[in-house]
Structures are given as structure tokens and as C-alpha cells.
Image 1 (cartoon, rainbow over the protein chains, first blue to last red):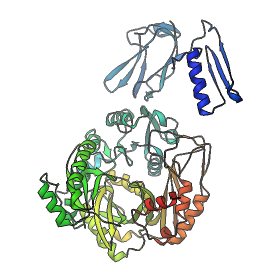
Image 2: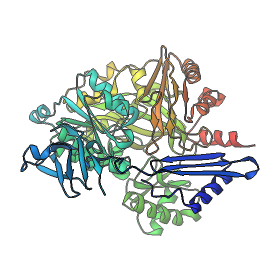
Image 3: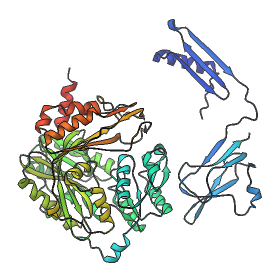
Image 4: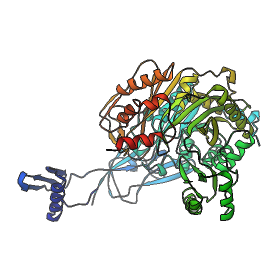
Amino acid sequence: MSAIDFSDPATIALLTDALTAAGVSGLEISRPGGQLRIVIETGNETRIDVTTTTQPASVVQPVVLKAPMAGHFCPGRSSRSAAADRLPRSVSAADILGFLRVGPILLPLCAGRAGILTKQLAEPDALVGFGDPLFEIEPQS
Amino acid sequence: MPETFDKTALASRRFDTVLIANRGEIAARIQKACRELGLKTVAVYSEADREAPYGKTADSALCIGPSSAAKSYLNKDVLLLAARLTGVGAIHPGYGFLSENAAFADAVEKAGLAFIGPSAASIETMGDKISAKRAMIAAGVPCVPGPDTALADDPAVIERVALEIGYPVIIKAAGGGGGRGMRVVPEAGQLQEAVALTREEARQAFGSPSLYMEKFLQHPRHIEIQVLCDTHGNAVWLGHRDCSMQRRHQKVVEEAPASGIAPEVIRPVGRACVEACRQIGYRGVGTFEFLYEDGAFYFIEMNTRLQVEHPVTEVTSGIDIVQAQIKVAQGDPLDLSQADVNCDGHAFECRINAEDPDTFLPSAGVITGLALPEGPGIRVDTHIHAGYKVPSYYDSLIAKLIVHAPTRAEAMARMREALTGMCVDGISTNIPFLRALFDDSAFARGETDIHYLEQWLKQRRAP
């Protein structure tokens, strides 16, 4: 994810210069937090619109936890009851959501962030590859 | 020493599932051959190739790593892990990537799987240019004049060797190949500096400073001989190809047979190649590459794998080389003898690359429209389709256009027609350049050598 602040005047000035130099007539960037539109007019006049919206607290982009390597997907923890693995549920960054089984080795799959675990995206014991989606988490700050 | 194969070992080589450790058109080609043999396939792919069509048509598919080839297709550990997780019995390495990596072949065999290719020992012998040359001389294969030993460090000895060969000479890295790690020396004054520079390049690029010296041929053609060997001592050669049309040592157009070479001239060379395979206990498919000048052949190297250009031999010989390669890996004896090999007509292959036709800079992006030529004597080996995204991480080869006709002139005409009917929208390709090349009169007359294409390009660019 880019950390660039598109409402920053210095960033807007830099983008405007770059667009003018490249002969590009305009640019529009839309993000959940707002929208930036730069239109380079003929005669080098420029129109800039910056619209920011207040993000509702409940609208958070979910994060997908992906397989770090190929292996057989084993969700949940053997030491916990099935009820404890019910979805959705709160998880902490350090929680182990499941494992990848590679031969005799079980590779733990950590949540990596606190939030609500909303979905399990792979079937138990399925063979998954690098980057295949396993879980969906709605982060909480 | 020839390798031996006992019956127990051969029985244990049988497999019903093949992991294809490659990408692009060759992954699709190998999958087709496996399917026709009734074998199941496992496709492995990097993140950049997640949407590749052969991943969807394989019996199973697995992403093995990020887009970088070093972390996916060149990563021995993840490939072996994928083989273990999917329970395959064999790995086909295709070409490029790990196909000529002796350590990978060894690791595959040690994991109890069949490596669809030669043994690690054969790959190692032929990968070192000095030991390869020595093996070829022992088998009676003609080699470029020059000693079959590594170049000494002593400048006086180096000078004496160059004088004995006669200038111009070429200095080559023993571990090099594909046009890398070599330097031409036109006269004595430039010899020592060329040796020092090449030695350093060889040390850095190939991990070994070992060099050798040969006579530099001025206007040779690149001719190669395809061989096929089983594990029962049977070996045949499947005719010859001319791959002289090269740019920066990379083949652009290949044809079979090489025109203008009398059968009685090339037959002894083919027989010597077969004999060399028997002597080194070679198994599977391989290609002996030669320079050909003034009616004489000079061995340069052996490729211990399937070649990109194998289709021109397939369409002229009628033999499915990929299927034959897999059957050999199963331990089957060859089902043909040398007398059964009859090459008919003439074939050309054009490598269709995603690159600018003038600058040859790679062109990645989405293919928005695609028209592939069809008809008698036309074959297209490809994995692309409309909507396919050509990734920027790998070789720019996106398709191979192959034509076959009774004569060379008819095959050229068919290729012109096929190139006209081929259209790839959304990215740049070298198709316009190939169209122009097939209109060249010197090419049509067969009057070309390995330097011809570079000179032709230079003339085109001249104002």
C-alpha cells in the first residue's frame, strides 16, 4: 500500500509539474479516503480538486492472509475446541490461525494483525500454493 | 565410462504423473505430450504466471513462489517440495531454467523421481566445454582446431598455443555457453589482455576461471544434429538443422534440414554423434552443435536437453521428440532404428517474441487481440490467448510458428503467408521484422552465415 498523502500541497505540486513535463492532460486518483483530480488546462492553467471524505469507522478494507509456501492447509489449532474456531471471531496479531503441513513439518500461520477473522478461504487439507488466500481478517486499530 | 542400467532400476523409473518445471509455450507443449501418453501432469507457476492457461488444463497446479525466476523456476528446493506434495513420479525440466543443471538432475534422482533428461554425470561432462571436447575427440566427432585442455596461466605458453592454431583465435570460458564468456583475438598484440579479461569474466559469471582456445572461424553456419538415445544402448540421429539466423547469439529462425549440405557429408557426422552418445552412456534427447565452414564440421557444444527448435525436426521426421523423451525416461527401448528415420520436406520455425521489432526491447502487457495462422503445414506452439498478460520477468518468447512444405522455397512461401496471417494486438512483437527477413533474397538463396542477420539489421538501420 502506498503511504503517499495526496492532499499534501507539495505532492500535488510535484505531480502537476510531472504531468506538465510529460504532456499529460490530467490525472485522477480515487482512494477510500478521498479523491484527487488534476486537470492541466491549455495555456498551462491548472485545475486541482481535492475531495476528502471521512471514513466511517465500520468500513475497513479486509486483509487476506496468504500461504507463504506450498503445503497442505490445516486450519485451527488441535488444542482448541471447534467452538473456539467459529467465525467470525477476534484474533490478536500473535494468534496462530492454522498450519501448513509440509511432510512431517507443521508451519504455523500467524494472523499478523489484530482484528476480526471473518473468512476461511481454503478447504481443510487442501493443497495450496505460494500466495494462495487462506483467511480474511478485518483489521482493528 | 558408459553408464549401466539394471532391470530393477528401470522398473522403478515408471511413473504416471509428471511435474513440468517450466513455463510458457514449452510447459503447454510438454503437457500435451504427457496427455497423449496417458500421463497426468502437475503445472507449477510463479505469481506472475498465476493465470497461465496450462495451469488450468493440468491435472493439478501449484504456485511455487514469487514472480522472480530465482525464487520460483530456478529454485530447486521449492520444485522438489512441489513434487513431493503432489506425489509425482517424474520431473520434466523443459529448456532453460534448470534443464541443464546437474545438481538439480542429481537431486531429483536422489529424491526417488525420474529426471526426464540425461543423467547428472552426462550434464556435467557436456557442460564443461573442455571435457565435452575431449569426449567428442575420443568418439571421432570433428572439433574446432585447438587443444582439448584448459589454457595455461603462463603467457609464453598461451602465445605458443595461439601461434600453433593460427590467428584469429577465440578465447572461451570452459563453463560458458549461449554466446557468453568468449572473446575473439584477431592478432598477437591483443592476446594477453583478451585472456585476462575473459578469465575474469569467466570467474565472475560461471564460477570458474578455466578457459580454452580455438581457431576462430570467419563465416561459419550454425548446424546442429538432434539425437535420441534410450537406456538400452540404442541411439539414433534425427537429421540436422540450420540455426545460423541469430541476433546477439540468440536464434531467431531455424530450419530443417540445413540446405546445401550433401547427405554423404553430414552422414558420418551424425554417426559420430550417435557413437559419442553410446560412449558417454547418454540417455534422452540432445543436440550436437557445430560450426560449418568450407565443407567441414567443427563441434562447439552439446545441449543436454530439449531444444526450443525441436519442432522443425518433429515435422520433418514425423517423430514426436517430447513423447520419445518421456518414453525413454520410463525405461522403454526406442521403437525405431536409424533405418526408420526418414526426413521429408523442409521446415522453418520463427520465434515470435514480445519485443519491439526495431529496438528489440521487451514488450510486456495484455494481448488484446490474437489471430493465429492455420492450415496444412502450419503449426503454432504457444500458450497465449486474447486477454493473456505477458509478464516482464522472463524470456520474451510467446510463440513458435512452424511451417512444413515439400521444398525450402515452398516452406519460405508458406512462412510468409503464415506471418501475414498472424496478428498479436496490445503488445509489440517481432512479427514485422520476421516478415521483412522472409522477403530477403540472400536468405531465400541460403547464402547466410551466423553473422548475416546482424549485418542485415545494420544495413536496414543505415540512413
